[in-house]
Structures are given as structure tokens and as C-alpha cells.
Length: 161
Image 1: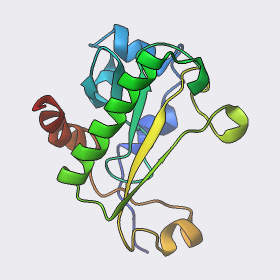
Image 2: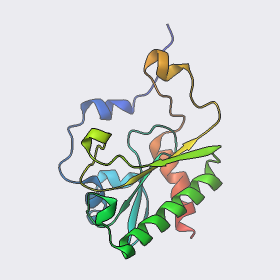
Image 3: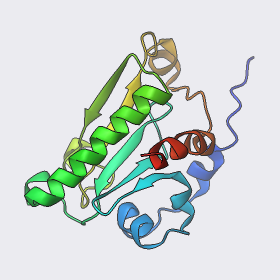
Image 4: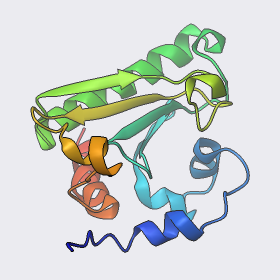
């Protein structure tokens, strides 16, 4: 029998859900443990790695304001938010060199939103061949780099702008 060694998953299994909004917490408390995954903070938005990624480099971009839907954002808030999405795309393209990207939002619990009260977009790097038999047959998704390593690699690129 072959073993899949992923000791960092124990945190996911044993951790209690943290109260409050993730995006507001890392915005207001830069020393929060989840802030280790923050890639970039601007006046308008926060870019953070997804703690439970689909692929390496899976980022979430959230406006700094706590609003549940895109239509609630003012033009200024939307503009700053989308500039941060653009920057995230550029950094991922230049750093992890994906063959493509999935970009999307889950609006509301019924749509799969894990944080339904603070709108955010997922930016997921994709590579040709990254879909294989593991998720289908074994219900396992392989992520090839530790989250903190990915954060350390991407953060300087964001900061360089």
C-alpha cells in the first residue's frame, strides 16, 4: 500500500471554525495566524491564499469593505477590487506560469460560498493535465507545494509593484 503523506492536513481536521469574517480579521489583525497566507494588502482589497486550495497558488481576492455582493460595492470599491484581481492574475501568470486560470465567485451558501457575507473572487491557476484520476477515483486533490512556501514565493512579487 502506498501512503499519501500530508501532515499539514491535521490542522484542517482538528481545528474549530474561527468566529467572524476571515477577510475582516486579516484586514484588522495583521498578526492573526491566517495572515500568514496574505499575499497583498491594499487600501481597496486583500489577496490571500485559499487555505483549502484547488491548486497551488489558488488565491482569493476580497474588497476591504465587508459587503456580501458585487452589486453592493460602490464604483470606487469595485474599481480597486478589480485592480487587485488584475494584479493577482499578473503575478500568478509570471510566477507559477499556469496554462490558464479559473476566476469566479460563489455568491451565497447555496452556490458554495464558505464566506457568504464578504464577497470575494477565487483566482485558480490551471495547467494542462492537472485534472487526473486522483479526484475522480480516490476523492483526493494533490497540491504540490505547501501553502506557506507558496506565500513566501508570491509575496515579494506582489510587493515589487
